[in-house]
Structures are given as structure tokens and as C-alpha cells.
Length: 163
Image 1: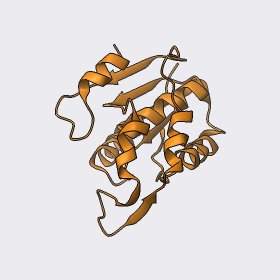
Image 2: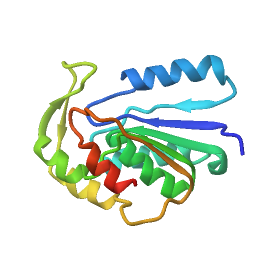
Image 3: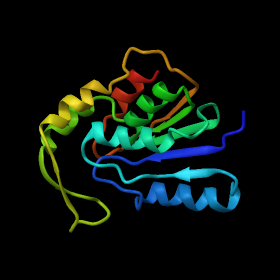
């Protein structure tokens, strides 16, 4: 089936203004103008982020949609793919975000705009744990792209999670 709708989910402290999100949007527009592309600004709360995403794709045809996510967005992409049974592509996905983001509890800034501040609250760790799909078989085809040299995530953990 042809993909008609594409969702891109950015990572922690990132935004739709990230290089990957902008490159994807810039490629999709001229090469696939028939494709509906959406990259929402995700709130810091994982629960709120996934509620926003699910509301945004509620009217999308799930059999012909796909989701792409990078880093924490890759973790979210796995969850969305399980909920909607759509294909997913995960770019250096976070494998243990609850563990890895615990050290970021408190005030943070975004990568793209250091003057933009937000709070990452302790309860978000539990929200991340509730979204885990580890141990579940993929609900639809998935592709994982791993790269060494990620500043935050260990590629070996990703390779272990997505063999």
C-alpha cells in the first residue's frame, strides 16, 4: 500500500526546527506533494506528547500512514506504530529513555533555541515507562537505522534492542 501520511517525531530538547525534521519536510514537499507530512512540537510530558500525536493522526488512514522518529522520537515512533499498526522508521531510537532522561529532571533548553526553556518533571519518568514496547513484536514493518557516535545514546544498546 502506498504511504499517504507521514509523521515525524523529534527527540528530547528538539523541535520541528531540527535539521532532520527540516530536511525531511524539504524533501517530501517537492518529491511527494501528495503526501501529508506532520512534525508536531512535542510537549515535555510523554503522556501529553502521545495524546497530541494520537489526536493528530486520529483521522489519518492508519493502513497507509507511516511514522519516523529520531532518538526519543524513535521511542515514541515505536509506541505510535504499535497503537496504529503502521510501519515505522526509527533513527538512533532511545532504548531506555526513563533511565537516560532521569538526569535531565529540571529546567532545560531546546537545542534549536537556547532561550526557550521548559521543565522536565519527575513524573515524566513514569510516563516514559508506561510507553515502553520492549518485548512486544512489531505491529507492522519497522526499520531501525543505527549510527555510532551519538552524543547521548549508546548504539550497542540500540543494536541489542533492535537486532
